[in-house]
Image (cartoon, rainbow, N blue to C red; front, side, top):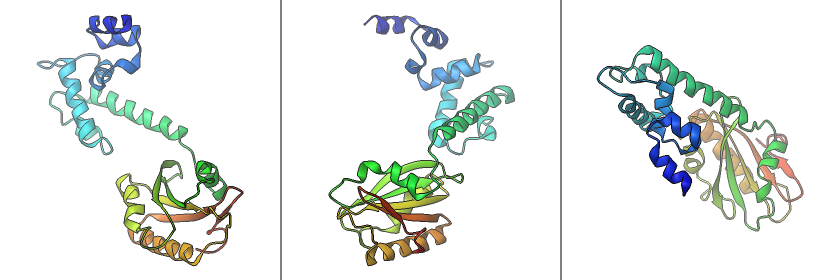
Length: 219
């Protein structure tokens, strides 16, 4: 309880940071520390809240020009914010896993290899093959009606991914692709061409190993 009572006594974000830690700070307080001061007619907190509103509205496409649309925010302060964002992005990307082959796909999905049902999954990659996200698309026997391109590619479009890899487990332990596996792969491949999002591979895996349809010349 001491930490909470102390928190209520600190009016300045920098004091909270020094005494309790960065994780307790609200978004606008983090921005306020980056800015340091406000501007004429607008204190640092009002200015910070306007910047946070821009973050919430459209963070992915935020740029210097959009920041400068805030009345009174000069080039120097806007540059500080945009540089802090870019630096964070670069280091976050460094921490992301890079998927370059079927072995790395298998390692990423090893928690699914003992499942008793078929799990169809999609791995979404950026232009440098960094893993942006992994999603379960469907659970159940694989067929064309169950695996619809819309559900597979929608997250890739939303997150501006450059490519995807799909994968599913064979609880039977047999790695050979079925006719349905090949048909689903071809359908997704064609859909990817239309959308400009490449399907890099379809990996089938069991508890004992994996098969890449790309490496097996099946796609």
